[in-house]
Length: 323
Image (tube, rainbow, N blue to C red; front, side):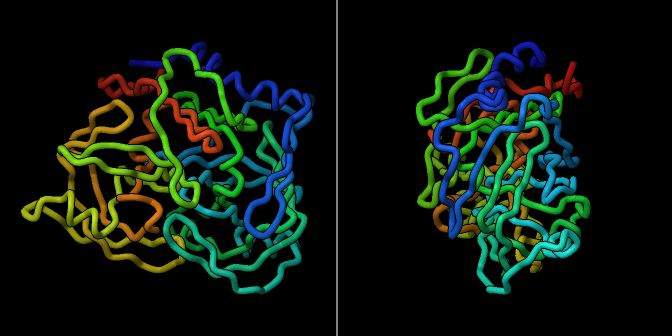
């Protein structure tokens, strides 16, 4: 089924109040070791927030950091927002070499920090960090994303509402309400919970067994299972291959890959789901769901309220994805 832009426009209207310059409640939120101040872009500066994407659906948002435009990866699997170290040096940001350990998509980086840095999502919102993480994002460059110089992580996104329309490649960021009103059809609410560290999670089912999966928009694959969950849900006689991938801490991860016969998630049933074994934090539940699946669905995520809405797939089954 195709989703028209008119229907999506009504569902995405949540951002209009925030972006119009009206008073925003609670504009400052503490995240990690520093305060993040948020403010709307002035009405005269507003522009459609279109995003770029990879073949597997990663969301790359146009941003401006310290006055220079670049792209940032929207990553609900990253604990922190991060600026690439080389890019930070190009910008002349003053950093402290504190060697901190940073959680990102189930991995750890060693990083520095920079103070009083602004990051503007073009046409949407400005984040001003008292302190922001600076680290080597070589994994993105190795994956062919050399034009991506930053990651927008959960220390920011936990306080935002994110609406993604994969058909028009349009994204809206709004200041999240703790008790949001339901969104109109064709969106429908899906039960969501928060992990121990605030991770947005969905309940699903593999075969007859229940699973808890963290939503990871920084993951290109469809389904990833931690090792214990792999042993639980993947039949011993499944055909598997061994593959290698570069993870967030710039190390090479060797893991098993296979197909899951059936996954029920968000009211949809998926068959022959590409599945990989992955190292993830315990708080992520059984594993994660990535953009390999979510890239086909308009969705709205409000992590603050623990709310998730999804619309029917933009892929009608005929190879067409959009009108």
